[in-house]
Image 1 (spheres, rainbow, N blue to C red):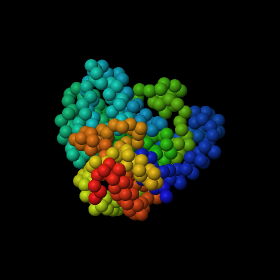
Image 2: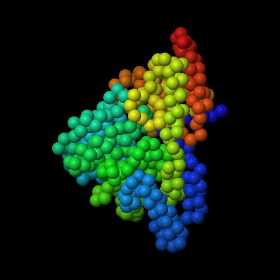
Image 3: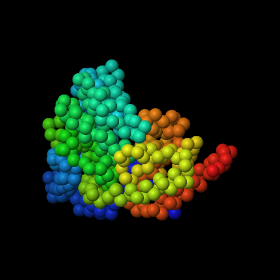
Image 4: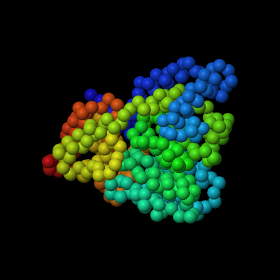
Length: 377
C-alpha cells in the first residue's frame, strides 16, 4: 500500500483544482493577450483568478503578479530591490528557503553584505534578533512566515512593523503559510510576499508575487510586457484557474490530531527521537524529527520500499548529500542533522497512516541497526 506523507513538498491536487484546470484548458484556449473571443475568455479567467487570490490574502487585485511559483516570485522581489543599488546590507534568516538564500548569495560581495540571523534551538528566529541586525544601511529584509522543514511559525508581524516605520523594504516568503496560517497582506503592511499553488492542492508551476502599491519590479525575463509590464510571458491560464479553485479547499488544522498521535507514538516506541520545533508554534501538519545514529536518506529509502513517501530535508535540495541548513543553523551538528526525516500530512491521510508509519520507522530502524552490528532496542 502506498502512503503519501510529503505534502509540504507538494500537496496532491484537490478535485476542484483539477476540474478548473481542465475547464480552462478546454473552454478558454486563447492567449489572454489576444483580442478575439478566445483571448477574452482566457483573460476573464486570469482576472477572476487574480480577484479571488487578492480577496483570499487581503490585498488589492492590482498587487497580484502571477509567476511560475514561489522561487520566481522571490527572485523577482530580490532583484527588483537590489538591481539598481550600488551597496548596502540585506538581513535575512538563516533558515530561508534556497529560493531566497541562493539569489542573495550571488549578490554577496564588495557591494552587498548579507546578514543571516540564526534561529534558537526550537527553530524560531526571534523578532528581537532580526531587528538588532537591521541598520541604517539595510536595504532589504527577508523573513519567511513558516519554515518549510520544521513548520515553525516566525514572528513576521513584529519585524514588519519595525521595517515599515523605518521605510525598509521587506519580503515575506509565505509559500508554506498559505492555507495553513492567517494571511493578510495589507494588515502586514509589507512590500512583497511570495506564494505557490501546489502547496495547497493547486497545480504545480504557478504562483504569485504580491507587490505593495508603488513598488517597481525589475523584470527577470523582459518580453511582451504581460502582468502590467511586471512579468513578461503568456500567463498560465489553466494553472491560474486551478490556483484560484484550490484556495480554502484544505483545512490543514484538521491534521493536527494525526500529527500529534504520530509524534506521541514515535516517542513511546523510540525514546531517543527528537521532535524539532515541538515547543514552539508550528503548522498543524508538519513533523520534523531526528533519529540519532540513523542516516536520514538511507532511512527514507527504506520507507520508500515500504510504500511511504516522506522527506529528508527540503524537496528542493533532493539529490544532495548535504545536511539540512535549517538544522545546522539551529546548532545541530552535521552528523545529527543527516539523521532527520520530515513528515507532512495532508488530504487523504488518516490515523492509520500515522500508525503504519511509526511501525515502519521502528522496523526500518531495527533493520539498519542490525546491519550495522548495533544492539536493537
